[in-house]
Image (cartoon, rainbow, N blue to C red; front, side):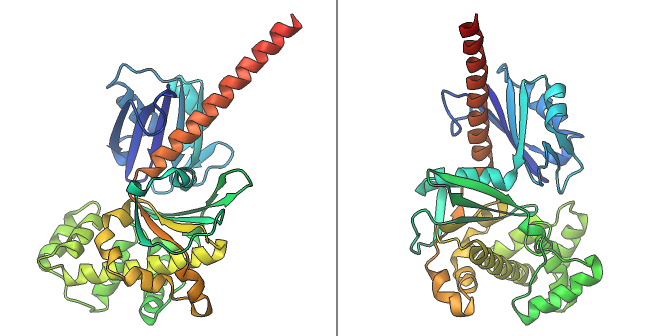
Amino acid sequence: MLLAGDIGGTKTDLAIISPERGPRAPLLRAEFPSAGFPSLPALVRAFLATTAYEVDRACFDVAGPVLEGRSTVTNLSWVLDEGELARELGLESVHLLNDLHAIAIAVPTLGADELHTLNPGRPAGEGVIAVVAPGTGLGEAFLVWDGVSYRACPSEGGHAGFAPASELEADLLKHLMKRFGHVSRERVCSGLGIPNLYGFLRDQGHATESAELAAALAAASDPTPLIGEAALRRSPPDPLSRAALELFIAILATEAGNFALEVLATGGVYLAGGIPAHILPALVEGGFMRQFVRKGRLTDLLTQIPVHVVLARAALIGSAIRGLELAAAETATVQGRGAARCSLA
């Protein structure tokens, strides 16, 4: 039995997966606040204590780079090591992969009911696919056709430098450089970045801050959900929060368009992570696509690229797919060695 997990800076999703039912039909699934536990083993033990199912392998996707089986969760204090996790949890094996790598693995398997299309475009057969995923942080990945199937490639493009696309964004960059020095794309295009946009617009006098919202934000451990809710409410939206959301969408659209050009994503761009699905009504209004295609002489190329919002828990699906693949490979290797020993005997 496989334990699949999506380890994020804000929340962690865990699921027990059987080979018979496959990656989309977990026997058990639960979500936990990541910061509520001192370590991943502590969180896993709490999950497994709720069930009689026994697992022998695990595959976790991590919000951070994975190098030689080790990773530090970018927006959390956990340091993960495949060997140490296997020993602490008493498992035969543990595999770590980047969370965007996991999402990218899942993308080719997603059905129409798991996507919302912002631009149908004209996808090129076997064209490169780009994934841009703003959640707690900003993740990016892409897929290339290897002649048989799509191969997922991780990236840390979210930590590359932020490039302004308007005078307002240029002022934002100057504002944040005073605080951070290096201003990455993640500083302005993620859950962590939205309060930076809100604070910049407030300090610039773009709109008056609501005293009620200001008090709520000051008391909140995470102000981002409050800003999002205030921006999306209908009766009426908070002007400052709405302005921050519109600036976020413009920056996301520019970054998605940039990444589409960088990898020539003629197979499509997929917006994943926790934020796009949550702000879907604002994305559908049209501002996103207008900014996405705004690429001068290559505007016509961008209009042909399909753009989809991922509605499914793609990272968890991708981790389960990868975990089952590795489990099957490990089993085949063991059986092969056993057969070889028998033939020698």
